[in-house]
Length: 272
Length: 203
Image (cartoon, rainbow over all chains, first blue to last red; front, side):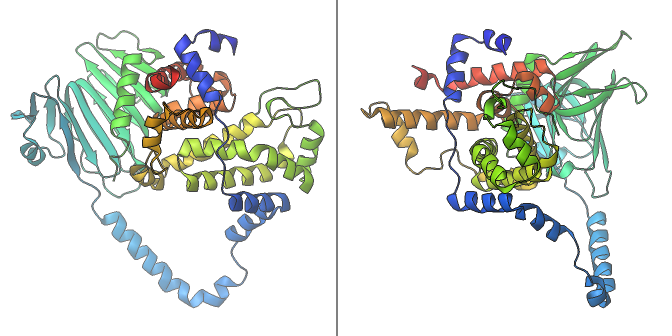
């Protein structure tokens, strides 16, 4: 702990004292008393058991309703699975410059035209200084920055285990999975390697001679191909080089972490 | 479940929470008087941490209930030689994380306001000139609370677990599954951001 304290600046030390001076937040007395009674008496655990265990005889009493009910549930599930998932939509464009969609150059301010042109499978590139956000419902958010050129993934569907993919040839792609991402996989390919995630906040920075992948939250599998993947946890990065040098795993760079934290903050209310 | 660190004290208590080992032995047997004392000692910390992490009274109540259910279910596994406070902080954080991942939390967050007290902003602005020190202190605390709420979740967690719950960076890293260095860096960045936001308070 001493090392932790010695590294603080005087300003940080003063803030730390302020935080430590905070008192408890009072709870509603009725909530506190009810929970206390349940905890002390053991009712807190008995209520859970009661809710989880089916009542004896339930199947016998209502058995004749169960078959049609199960059929109805199956039909609804089928409809849900077959129904189209969310579509990609242009959420935001900031900065001045141009955006190219499959080679067609559009002023970044012309968002209506961009929204019409950008489709799954199109190749979108932004000029330096332009940041472009694409969102697919509550599933996935992509942010193209620093001259990124990225292939838009296909629209997500409702199938369990749905797999989405994208490609980054240059620039920085940040992405964040949303609450609807559960059970899906997202992979990003660059000329130097592959990134696979099942739920996380990551940036993929492609430069002419390397790809750097930084993980802010969750974890990602990263490697030059599916047979050479490393699991990279939050706060770490992996750099893969074009010239065949061995990849490097280290702590994420402050610059990229700050970029991802700012991205997270900008996007915290995006998911529908 | 993350094991609590060894914080034994020679006086027969267990570190930060100050609970006697004999009491924790009785908690293991789920004796009502011991459970009541454990609840009275720990409820405030658990609820406050949950409230600050979720920024919602309703979610703080849900999380607190989940925590005490887990404590009750795992009572017989409690190590009476260890301070239960870090363990409680860990399961509180884990329960909050589940709420963050839920759709409900995202929706709540879209409509949550930082200042839930009508007229608080005005009072905070005028508060600097107030002669009542007690009022100024209260308002300072409110400003600090608001600044903490404005931190991204990951930063807020590390500040609260470290400075409010007393977990070391290594314990936080074990809880969150991150590297020690990543936690330390995030903590430093969080304090810097808080310092920038609270310059007026610190003057």
